Image: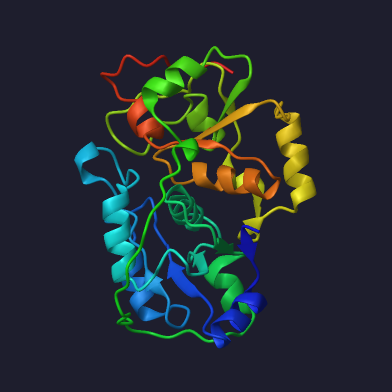
Length: 275
């Protein structure tokens, strides 16, 4: 189970049986932490993707080392035994990336709030302002290398007949018809990759029903033997594809560097712009 409804989350909170995380992040630089301080689900702690990351990589919000993750999350009062529910302010955008990061670190019980904060508010459940002060705890990671793929590994997969790269960027960016929002990047896509804009998997801030997701993936050529890789601009919305695949019972490797790495102007990685 990778998602949870607002009603079920409300019951878990009432039983003190969950740790809630606000994983809001925005590409346009909106200060999501400031908005979190204004209102959030009661006792939710804020997960900053740009801080709980690997700053040494030079790429935006790359996955943190297990040591950094354990330290940051432990300070949030979250242990590896807790039930964790992640949400964001948009409905479904960056929460999937936080969900994926927890899973990468071996967390077994982590879910995404279906519809995010808008669904919570629509159900007339309370919010609060301010910053909670959780009691720090110990967190033990168990890193899952099977959920992550690096650039050199991906290069070797491009010609593999049983591997499929799904790119979550909008179609205009995928086909090189629109510039990348980050400077210093080429336009286009990886040879052999297929475009699946994350917005096509989302309705009213939540993933489509599983039957619809399965049909979309089937039309893209996903079958039981396909090795799946998700990518996007900087590894955030690729996690929405990974979440959707998980809902259908499939695992995927996420290319953390995504186009921020692959599309660099001075990179030797191949890029195509035609359909």
